[in-house]
Amino acid sequence: MNTDTHAAETGNDQAHQAQNHSMTAAVQRRYGGPEELELERISIPEPEPHQVVVEVGASAIDRGVIHLMTGLPLLVRVVGFGLLRPKQPVLGGDVAGRVVAVGEHVGRFRPGDEVMGIASGAFAEYAVADAAKLVMRPSSVSVEHAAVSTTSGITALQALTKVGRLSPGQRVLVIGASGGVGSFAAQIATALGAQVTGVAGAANLDAVRELGAVHAIDYRETRIDEIGSTFDLVIDIAGLNPLRRLRRVLTETGTLVLVGGEGGGRFTGGIGRNARAAILSLFVRQRLTAFISKESREYLEPLVEMLADGSVTPYIGERTDLAGLAEAIAKVDGGGVVGKTVVTVGGAS
Image 1 (cartoon, rainbow, N blue to C red):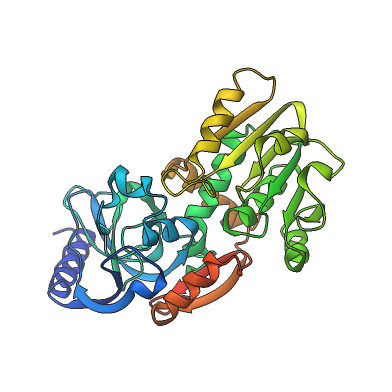
Image 2 (tube, helix red, strand yellow):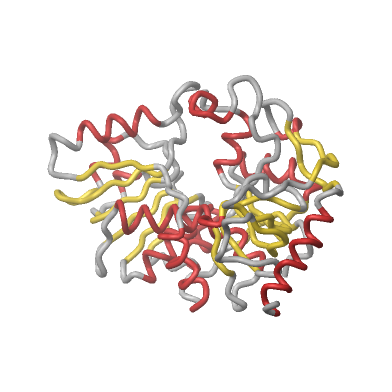
């Protein structure tokens, strides 16, 4: 028998034996605030044919976690995440860890591989992930840095390149530059040759400059349309500025990218503003766009290259473990974190 094949089969056998045991996970049985999270012992998941099981080293908190926790806007429930209660009781998407079992149709990974990407239920000791949403973690990228990068990093990369069509030398305004997506957007735009202006709170302006912004603006002191400059590309992550204000800081043919759907009403959130932008864009020279991030290796692979060569370094503002997860989520929800919050599960380094 081939040695590599035997090692893989042995690893799978050991992993499947482990499947008979339980794991610790942060479980949420109903929609609500962080107080709904409880640490429980539940069964370790089994992989479907195109999935792998990852022993979680670390995960991260992003705005999507908060939407799935609260079930708000209500559109989240309608599109398939559970009408009355969460369909997936374990939150957490970003993951970095070690493969312990692979589905029968998975050929890219084997037990023992160190991976990073998107999983289901990563706020636990083990999580399942589609093999198509994982890549190998470079040895030069720590588990913590890998864990906090995927969701926010690929969202920023798509906003700038696929949607924003960024070109070197352009002037880019990042609104919400100290947050998870914003901290990546500022760095990636700089790495791609743009001149970045970042908007954040006064306490976070030094951090924004460290991320590569040439100019850092306190949104409490200067309204967006009073900055005094126009930009080729505006990335609005904060979601609180009306379209008319954002258009005033765009060049005549500039592009606005609305990231996600923050703000707005209880049912659709910020989707209404996104729809208005798309309609208005049909009648003006400026491009007014919005998008929902696509979880794909198409964007994860170039992001990993940037992490590996040091052109992008994740900004970790807070660290927690599963026991402190509820408090950490509340802090992120309150806007009290610069960059990303990493959730260490299995001795990340």
